[in-house]
Length: 237
Image (cartoon, rainbow, N blue to C red; front, side, top):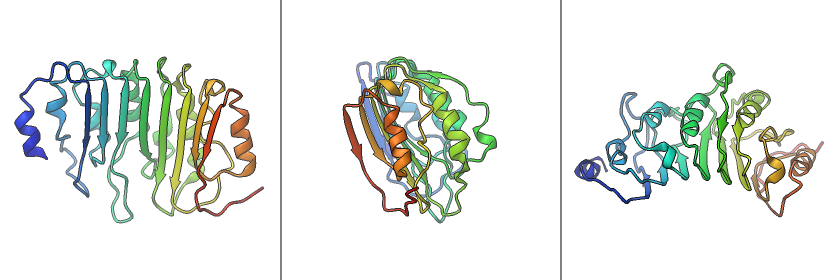
């Protein structure tokens, strides 16, 4: 892939608005290695849609991309998830928010967030992110290890969602792909402002009946509901 990207990195793409790229490489890369398409996106001044799939680079390599973030209306960021054998560097909360703060015109976002490397210290001091045009949000949280610290549910997740202002939000898709564990007793995104305006909801997470009811009560404008039940032990209290 790198050789092909090197060949086109000097070419300008003055009217290109859509760019999607997926890595086929597996495993860890060196800490200082930059994203192979970094020099290419510099040549895309009218880019509106950017999708990056399955790269295992450090989060700060994404924040260093030189592109017109403010012009983006759609962003997909799905890094390569951690495996059981090795911990691939992922995004810190601050790096995710750094990217979102640059995308003030964003209308749709798809994020895969691996929280397996996070601790309570990394979730402090979350700053506000204003996304006034955001209408469509897809977020997947992953934690592919069995020794989980799910107390993050009570600390980071409320702070993270509370820090995102998206008054135009109409569609929300939330997935919780955590290895093992029991049903969630709290709605992870309950602190998200403007849930009352959400019309379409897709849930892929194990919630207790009470948590599911609490979730639905937050969304009086709901018109469409999709529930995908994960095969996990469920405490029905």
